[in-house]
Length: 71
Image 1 (tube, rainbow, N blue to C red):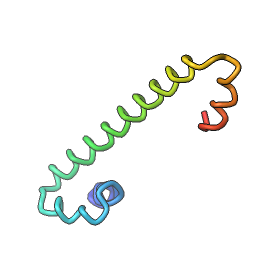
Image 2 (image 1 turned 180 degrees about the horizontal axis):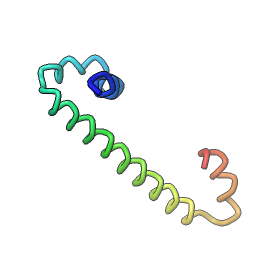
Image 3 (image 1 turned 135 degrees about the horizontal axis):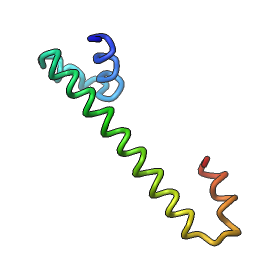
């Protein structure tokens, strides 16, 4: 489990991961879980906002814009 936590923290924090190395294993797991949950909430918020933005566009443009933004 420790390797997984380190991998996730390194992925998101980059070189700044050294700052959290002094945290206990439990605190690092808690930080990883918070980062994962925040990323999921952020992805959901972005999906909702982009769907709403597409609904605001004229129907004739929605398909083209959807393809451009990769939806």
